[in-house]
Image (cartoon, rainbow, N blue to C red; front, top):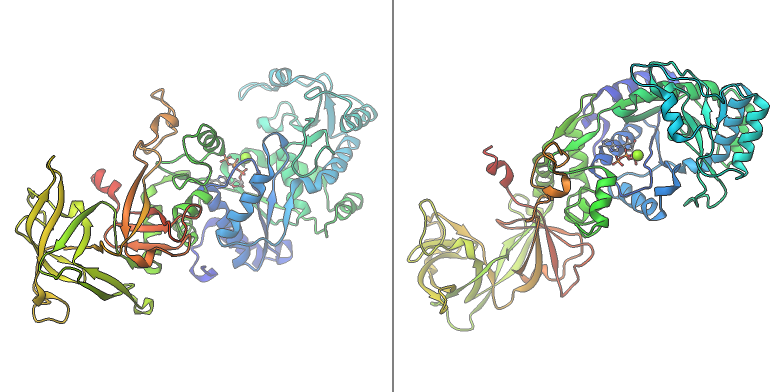
Length: 577
Ligand code: ATP
Ligand code: MG
């Protein structure tokens, strides 16, 4: 993990640094990552996680994980658990685990205070009527006919809302702000609604639920969050965030502070500051939980952790190292300008990380038999191969070698095109770590398919022999056919085949842009040392790419590998880059 010195600066870190130096918030730094548990986290969330946890780490602060669970209709404990796993996997740990629902009683008492102060009222308008009264960007709204209810009547109705006396949607509690405000968010926004639903954390205790804007700022204040970082779409909500903090005034009201203690929390209510930054976006993907949910529910992918999914659990199963995702968002930076980052940049970070950390192995994913006719029948040897070409600390391993090998079918061309430097009839190529072989004969089946290459090994070119340095143009990899281990290998590619799958201007949706070739499963041959490796371990299969032993399906004796990424960016080449 990086430290403060190596983490690039950005405008938010600058604000935090200045605030701390200036003694604001008593020099304390508190952040939080506040997911709604209504789906799995995706790569965009990782930007927010790295930012919030990174700042607390680098400025001696604290970062809470807070479930923003104010809308029970879409929330589930499955998501709560998955989110915890993903945050830990990404390499972060929270100071405290909280739920907005931990504070329902505090929110309720705060609402009572707003009513008592004449700052909130119970409104009987239906959702459609509220919309009609709200006005537009160019026209002011109109006051609700219920806006001038007395404090007593509001208190009575709100208590009865809480007691469950009214039907869903029959009434709301609204902040009394300004129906003529140029900011529509300030036109008497609802702060409570009636929803008779079982909540994943509070069960059936509450028939009313607070709205996001009201609950979020108060949750931040209760937890002593100093810098509340959120994405740009909340910029227009900031005046409401501040209005609620001003008018509820948690720190200024001993009774409310006490209600925080009563809920079981040591209380440092303070005055948080909301700061917005641009969402992280990647091309060739969609990053909305709603759309990812639809892909899962409609069976277009194999679950939230399908290795093609941009979810963190998908990235993990795909074999993307957490360090690569952290490095990616650091490289991307944090600004107020919306932008879309090329997927290739993320893949580049994955390659950078794995190049140093993944040991090398030999594997053949599209096998063609090669027989070395000048070795005796039954000939076997054990060769010693370095596990990493650039790092001796990885050590050496034994690799079996024999008269019968597998090579990649694409490393042979019966009628070679110009510039093809691998094996051709009558031609020579170097077998990695073995020596130079010549193709003497091409064996075909009745239908013309090439089934075997009969070759001879030039013994003088073997390592340590006089001709070991003799030059040939190509080097290819191989595995010993007599001792290779069979494996299912899944060759993954991008889930979408257009840069902006969300673009529906041509009448197509993201569902029409799924890449039909995003997964291919092949039967491969691996060198035996790959047969019993740990699930989730990542290897470079020489010349092929990086591969991870699948987290779910891989087992000793029945290996299953996923291709993490190829060694080079084929998409950039296709795009002419
Ligand atoms: P989605 O639209 O995918 O459902 P969301 O913003 O509704 O995302 P939340 O669970 O509410 O999801 O998000 C938790 C936190 O992660 C919020 O602070 C949100 O701003 C942040 N976040 C979500 N998506 C991104 C993104 N693409 N880039 C940066 N931060 C993000
Ligand atoms: Mg959300």
